[in-house]
Length: 218
Image 1 (spheres, one colour):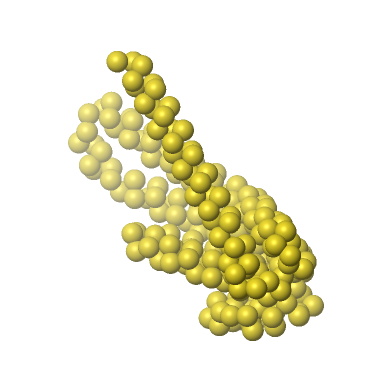
Image 2 (cartoon, one colour):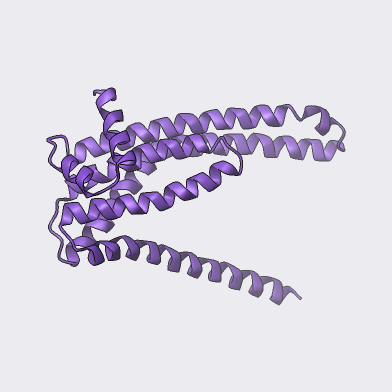
């Protein structure tokens, strides 16, 4: 695995967005599903390691508050210690599980876009589209994890990167499936709208459940 070549590909795609860069990547012999999986697993491992580092920093920060905790009542001291320990443990577990789930979610997401593009008349290969998607998803995943170390500002920058990722997805879909501008936009927008609808439904369900529980207890 040539890390220099991989980094050059990632940088090229991220800094020169457009149909030309994806058309060039599409013609490479390495534009396969296996390459995409290797890149996403690599990104997931790096993300997990950064997550473990964040957990250690969190644990150290909690430990550094020892003098303040000592001023609390004994009952609250035990409660604070339990919360700090469980938070660090959960963060560590989540980081390790991400090595499995991030590539899995990537494959599912690629499958969703592939299905929608095919239904709209596109003609492309799942594996090659997975590769095109990995050229920007893998580096953006790593960058997003690094930004997680920056309070507040990191969240704002990650939001911008999320929007930028949709732009790159549009170009990748358009090039791989040979779709018109309008249909490529539809392919990108449909999963986004479906996610928003699902989020609204879940929020409505949660609010309705809380209202029923607290309303019934009065």
